[in-house]
Amino acid sequence: MKLFIDTGSLKDIEKLVPIGIIDGITTNPSLLAKEEEDHRQILKRICDLVRGPVSAEVVATDAEGMVREGRDLAAIDEHIVVKVPFGPEGLKACGRLRADGHRVNVTLVFSAAQALLAAKVGASYVSPFVGRVDDIASDGMRLIEEIVEIFDNYDFATEVLVASARSPMHVVQAARMGADICTCPATVIEALFKHPLTDIGLERFLKDWEKAQAVKA
Ligand code: G3P
Image (cartoon, rainbow, N blue to C red):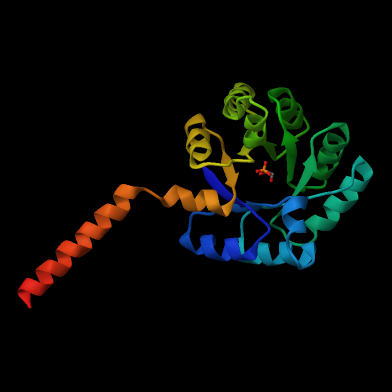
């Protein structure tokens, strides 16, 4: 499973990318709004650092505007994936941007029916928001199970990009279900590294080694 960082922060990216586990980046208007720099400049710098797919979202609400904005975003760098919101206008824009040869991520997906419609217009990625489904006392990961099953049934090329992942368990469950990608904040990716037995084990190895060196000296 590919792992993306859901961020607009260059700091997050500079910290995690050198480890070699990051395959791409997703951004959204809320994340980019937190940054001081102009969004086009940030997106360009992210693309230079990652060299994998970088989702950049349109803010227009009509298909015409989304296509215009999408083309403009795609011109920033060859790694840009245009993100459009789910809905009739978003799907119309998705079809047109795909016909232009751009990759498109259909976002704000909250049901298997929506994911199916996005796949039918050739979306490169669908982004079901698992954390936000959990927030309304429903089962976000069940949604991923359903989408993976439907896409497998029909061999859709659309990749399932698990979004709004809020915990390491979301990541592990996404991988068990065969999702293509999981995107999460840097804090969740950092939490994937942690296990108390790793820390205790390392401490013990180093202590034993030091002790032995002192005896030999
Ligand atoms: O980028 C979309 C998604 O990952 C947002 O997550 O935590 O704001 O629901 P969250």
